[in-house]
Image (cartoon, rainbow, N blue to C red; front, side, top):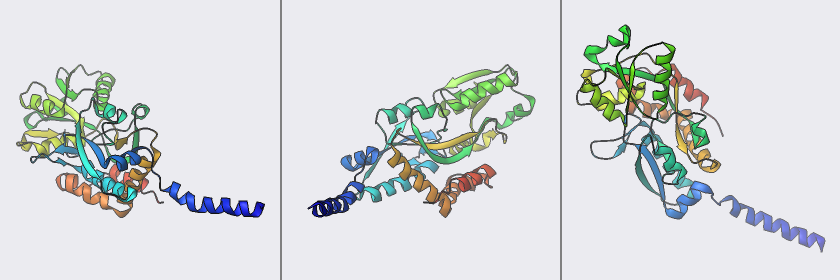
Length: 286
């Protein structure tokens, strides 16, 4: 009798366990139920993410996100509609926390304080904050910014780093805060500010998106280290692991370099050693 009961239990475990293994949780469960994945993205942060002239989401992290959404479709075994939702620097994390979006693409710096609000994938890019001036004013980088006005987007890590830089160098310059990089560039063109600061890669993207790219000069030096990553909701290990697996595969296969060349490499040439190091460090095997 005991042997028969034991055999019955073992048979139940054998056949039921695989069914439980196929159950999805968190974001994956929600995506399967709703039939859609919502991708949050910044509309004016080229080349990381932006809305192109046709009104379509484009950029380096948008392309990475497409690999992730394709993997989601394979994982849950059904077709999924991809919905792109514009976000701002102010509401992007709240959008994740309040379940308005499922993943955040763009030029988002991974920090410990932000990890109290959201989780992050493996790094997707590394850059640093720099300064952009009008080309006829590029000598400012050498002569200094004392008494000048420097613009920066508010509530960003660059705004914090810029403040620290001015304090550490005892530079008496005025920081002018903007809601978006687009506003900052417009102020620079109108000569309302003397320089605009952002991540160097963002500055390059702004120049490329401009109708008058030769008017701008981006300083080759950086004054901070900015590790970019995609953001997801906290405590959703399965969805984050799926995204990390996609990223690791992109790094191991070197497909990430194709994406890099499409949006960045063909404009600025040689890759930085930091970017190549990121690829090697994040090429994790299963």
